[in-house]
Image (tube, rainbow, N blue to C red; front, side):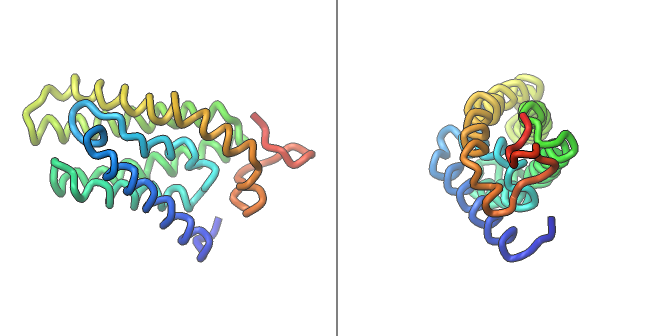
Length: 178
């Protein structure tokens, strides 16, 4: 998919929504024990394609500006964007199979857990492996337990096909494979 005005504007809206949800729910969005509800959007990244990758990376960067960890937390935009891109590619290469969203969300959660766990350990002196586990569990709740059903509901609406965000192959009847 080309980066055009539609991709840019959709990505910016995604980033704004991600940042607003994270900052608005800051008591549960930051720290060693967190459930960042904005990560529900991660499961929808494969439907957005490049707009989702852009929105996830920029959204995490903006959301982490007021983080108690300071500027170092903004660096988490890098692994977040890389994992969002990996999710899009996995979904696309596996012909839009819904199981790839679960696999991608688990991988995303693992990478973010290690990254955030390391930062929390470095800044606060907390045990890295424990904080990584807490962050992983919180991320799984957001991306898989809540995000995956949201992904399925959004995909069922067909809105992404209507606006040209569909990735990969489709069945002959125009529906995506599961």
